[in-house]
Length: 198
Image (tube, rainbow, N blue to C red):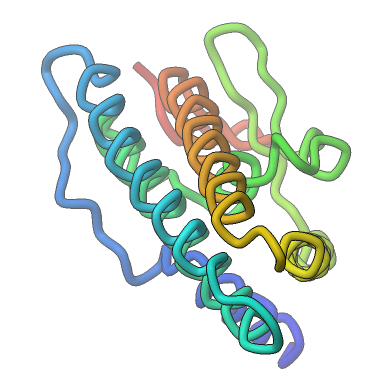
């Protein structure tokens, strides 16, 4: 359906995941060490973007919200794929895994049905396009919250920028921790087809 492909194109535009190929490969050592370095770099980048784009006040601040979310989500999407690559599982990065890693902290009630953690394995439940649309609605809600926050803090731009940057930094760290927890395990699809087995 045209609507389905449009929704998927919007999601890919936000995350940039389809076009991105990680420069990293499966490591022979502990992937966590490299993942921590990548996470620190990504968290600092996203914090800088959020803080910088939170500085403008007045009407202009409205036009910085969408670019901020797109840039932050794209960096986080690339980070997830990089972490998957370190575990030798880049090919297994599906939209379900991406959504789970990116939105678990803020939308647990939406994403908890995507995966089932059964000890050493993660079972993926393939999702519908309606679910992806609900995530896009969540992104719209994030836009609304950022707009309200920017209006509330317009008289304290430095404080608002620091707060926004700090929250984005912590969010990126959480996204990374979720990805490490997932890709450190075997990944299967609900149908029973094994996508990755150690």
